[in-house]
Length: 359
Image 1 (cartoon, rainbow, N blue to C red):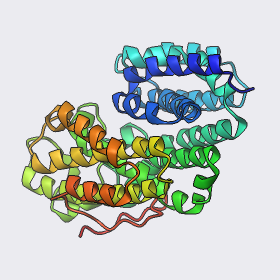
Image 2 (image 1 turned 180 degrees about the vertical axis):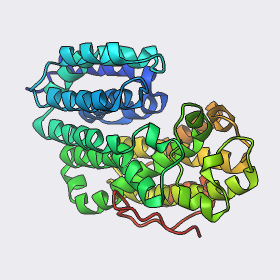
Image 3 (image 1 turned 60 degrees about the horizontal axis):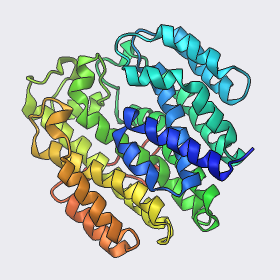
Image 4 (image 1 turned 120 degrees about the vertical axis):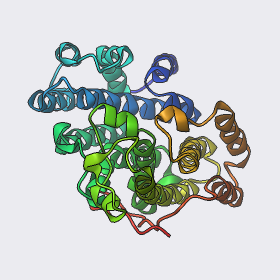
């Protein structure tokens, strides 16, 4: 078990070729990590994306979805054949699943081969994350959540199962990588789920109208009801003034989680600039997305609030020079978040949920 230099380079080359097809953001950020950590994080992302593909395809019925998720876990536990798993998934996928996602599922055997070459602690961390995702996602059945989640607590639980667990996974991998990071393990775990939730909430806000077209809604009914908006009538043209008030409150909650994400990042030793940049680029892009939404409440699609290439380049440029400077990073965060509403979000917000109150 383990990686020789040639095998490591070959595995990294494969992942670097695949990641841009399934996530432009992670294809940008993951290569900033030290090589052996890059390999583990990239592999974890691809495995989680395979689980997501099974979850997101509306043509897979819920009973089959559960069996396929169980099969994926069995593959990681070496109780099931990766090729057989892929052969069962591919025919079940409907037209809503992209060719790039189909190709990734078809490559499950290759992804699992790389997983098997990781260290045992890395494998355990990834397997734990995939298990939590596969156990948690079925709670949010497609047909049952078409008109929104019941309340903020349910939104917290949803975000935890699809993103907070990834924050915990990354923390496990970071702590395994460097002993001086491991000394901050308790504090990092207190913020890890919040970090993931901030990114997921930003995606929910950005994608709300695209999700609606596909029959999904991940917005909390209680939050919008306070502002007199009934998600039963959710539509781009319906009562945008009241809808925008609820959306601003949700932006404030996402902003609060991203503040926790910055605190998390500053706990990483300053010399670990690669890990810091990996975190900072995700935070910066999320903040700029929230600003675009806040400034354009009439947006109709993710393209209307897409962060420009110039802005992405600016985030990359500034953090390359400031990744080891905590004071500069706090200043940059304030500048990027300027004008956004903000909620005070508890540092340990996770499956139990504590979304806070907008400031």
